[in-house]
Image (cartoon, chains in turn yellow, orange):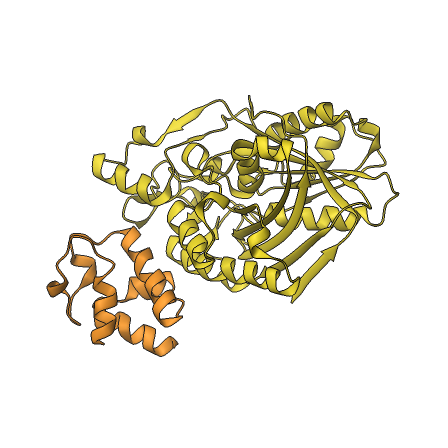
Length: 352
Length: 74
């Protein structure tokens, strides 16, 4: 069992940036009045943001990072670690973290790399960054940039993905700090479900070919080519309602946490129906489980920090909070974390 | 089987409970939808601790087919 306890790590701030461009699901051409209501009731998604072709995930994350660095009054040369978690990088190579290091003006002594994970990515990223901080000097600072422009991978003729997903980028600032509770993690992987959320072509298992652009009819009102995202909603649902509660319970049990003491439970924003099943299975009261689905949809790896910025800004700024977060999805990969926040810096949501 | 049919029928709001038998071709019911498929998966998880996959739902025609899958996974 991958239980990890990391001491001496502290979240200093969280920022998020979304594209200005809003897509309203009521204007989605594949919905009639009845199916629109059913979709919104089921998923909770009324609208979301879409990055236009000139905006990459890295651009959204960079804007969030610049604001955070400014508000924290950090010196850029003091940032020792830059981790970029995304499945929508700038290029196949080089790693986007390298490009961001230069664009942000960080030191060449900076440890920088990409992590390719989706829905579980913020929790995995937090684990990696926190662990790295233990082996640096006592003033070490790190930036965790997490986000996706997943709509670029979705077919406009696929009603299972296009109305559900949205684009967002986030930045989380962490530092080495000996006066904290630390963080506790529970991490998992089940590659037997790798096909549940997949883009078939364009990697090196199936390189892009003329065939890749052929449109397939995959289900009722689901048309897409092999360079676009395929989502087996039923498989993912079955996985999520089982694994997310198991992981949260395992975390609580292993580290002997007091569930009642938690201020918030932050779940990856998959869709309302699935998330509510998870919440009810864990018997958590609704006021402890914030959602950002209505206005932003499922933003892949960005959902947890985006939900914190958009729903909990005042609380995060003004109180000491005990939180559990759980990310679950593509991989299949899932992870939970217990972390505290104490009067952290949370800039207003940025739009570009 | 009787209990399974009851659990299955309970996921539906508009279809009369009397319409459900082991031979019901559930995907032909007017109320059937992708969301109902998820409700059935959740029901199997809650009542039988069974994890149904997308293909289990896709391959099943009647309620009995699905019952057999649930039974085989228990």
